[in-house]
Length: 261
View 1 (cartoon, helix red, strand yellow):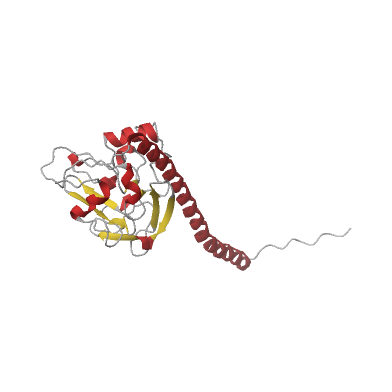
View 2 (tube, rainbow, N blue to C red):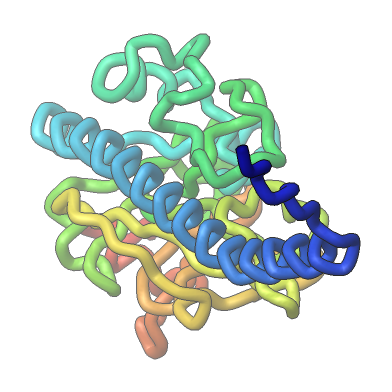
């Protein structure tokens, strides 16, 4: 009876070669997997926008005005942080998410790509309002500290297609970098973000569609779409397409029927 040939074990060199091959394959696959995860997060994020946009559309139809933006002028808050005021919470509660006061971590107001912010309403929503209504207290100035009730009929004529909100975007160089949703490039600039239009269509816009305007705080705005800047009771102007006349009092022509006197 013949005996079978003895099995041959791997030598150390052969084992190291196999490990090296696996490491090379993993290094080739990991970037592709990360790109696939990023694409999935962007899609999930865009679905959130559609849900928010549907609520906007219903609110516009019911009231004739744009919903109030997050933030509270009377407390010196900037709307980009997304801290909700009572008016924004009421809008969200009635039209978008009935659990907005204590939302789950998967709520539509939280971007799945942002892992640096707490998914709690006290830490703010993860999306910026481009154009909306704004509620403030008594006004010592005719152009600042004024309540702004943005009519629905104005939205289609706003420069840049009538964007109503967009991904929270910030440069890494600023102190507000954790607000940024979709990461940064090697220069610390945002990789891009989704934007939502008044007709409820959304699209992804790459890094070249955003501009860093205030490096010390990282503030970044869309290049091609109007976006209001409201900071407490001080600032009320907009950024967006070139030559749109958005700075100072010129912005009013896009937002109200008659500028304040």
